[in-house]
Image (cartoon, rainbow, N blue to C red; front, top):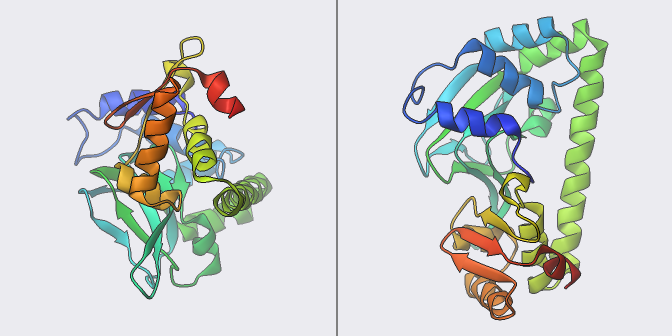
Length: 248
């Protein structure tokens, strides 16, 4: 998914200035306005939510939510990367989502009022904005447009999860890797047919997200590199021919 324009601004601002501190009010409001769950809300509704919300600073590998925990709100990632994962009885982990700056999570479980079925853990140092459920419910009562945004946002999540499930069950390992890279192209880094994709996590975590063995992911990247379609430099994947990659 392409990065929103405001993300770059926030990342620049956060280079040692606000880390561990408070966010300026204008940036807090800008964050709220970019989230689909809230983008149909009135200014007064956003002001109410901003007044009741708070930021949480997290170190790398910190657990925000354990499986079975209850939480009375949802979160927006301001900077850093976070993974949502399930672990089987045998200890096998599957990474359902990797959340980056400008993305929200835990909206559905907030409304269900049930324990979390998944674990939420940071991949890097991170800062998140916590939005309490009580503030959302009050806005729903006072602003009919708020409910429209919520339904649209949750419907979009269901659609994306269905699309990902289809890919995981029907696509080959190469198709999964190509699909992932194409979904994470950043338009601002695109020059003609070339583009750079920065992986939000190490290759082991990306492999778990794609339901692949780490060695399978490495093999696919190597094969695509031999075909002259990619150049791998650590977490940076240079896509050398977007159209040819798309046609595979």
